[in-house]
Length: 163
Image 1 (cartoon, rainbow, N blue to C red):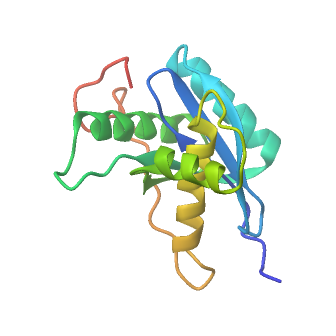
Image 2 (image 1 turned 45 degrees about the horizontal axis):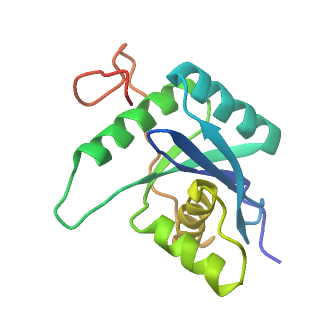
């Protein structure tokens, strides 16, 4: 049996909905946990903090779209949002490639014969988290987490309310 590493949350950041997943403390399985309808940044972060506390999470993995052409407006928005999340939560925040996670989630649901839910965000978050777990077996160190910036903007670029 593998040693416990602690529960992680996985996050699929969306403009309208945040998909959230979690894994067990041994990092054996990731599963969808919740959908958060976006309202304000403070409310969204409070809901994520409450989920993290309820699940006894030790970290959060945020999916970032990484495309062959490089950084996009969406990836910059997610990075800025994750930096702000790092300032709001007392947990390490890790960024991980979320490319095609929704398509992979849909494919998994098809393979197991499950009905497709109205929203795939939670399932996409589980795919992101499962990929992170698979890339970090116990013998491999975790990547460095995001560091929250100490200034008010908490972003690498101009501050916006949309992130």
